[in-house]
Length: 270
Image 1 (cartoon, rainbow, N blue to C red):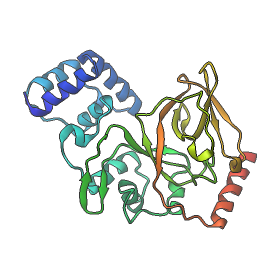
Image 2 (image 1 turned 60 degrees about the vertical axis):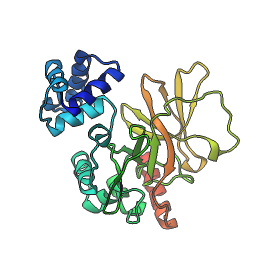
Image 3 (image 1 turned 90 degrees about the vertical axis):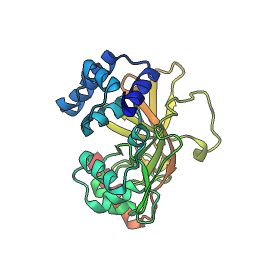
Image 4 (image 1 turned 120 degrees about the vertical axis):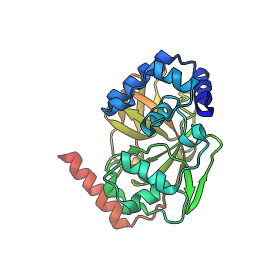
């Protein structure tokens, strides 16, 4: 048994998944991405766990997604900034290299200000899971690599206007996926910001749950001048995680803010 095969078997059993269940999950991913190569048969996975086999990159990506585990945690390999940029480019091919560089190194000195990439993110977006790299140094292994994700608050998303500006890069802790409907917060700064996924995309903001926990309401800031949005909790909307940090420099000019607000108001009026 190879070291990787042994690790894959341990991870699968930790998740209490049978080989057949993993096969069904990969079929769902193949349909989601329109890529038949993502399907992994139960028999092939069983051989992979028992024997020494080369694993195609796409297959490894699929297993990482099924098991909700990062590449570096599964393989114990560091991913360079260049490799991280390549992975991002595969998911977001329209982004120029300068934007990719900033997104693969969100804590670094060369992160672009939000106004430099607003045009590339009209809507709020969840980025693929990547290791954190610092400049030309190898990525730093994180303590909870399966828990942290990054997202970008879209140019058209003014829900948190006044607190978090469009274009901000958000660090998301996906280990926190429940909303406490009973807790009362003394100020806006104490209230958690959640990153959400619905059938029509991603959303970010403060959330309310009704007493029966049937409806989730996205609450905009007072400056947003936007209506609340509501979904059936866990049927039409899911919580990806809670926002723990805003990583982008927030250097917006007044002209940029007004231009963005006016553009959003014009689009709403049409």
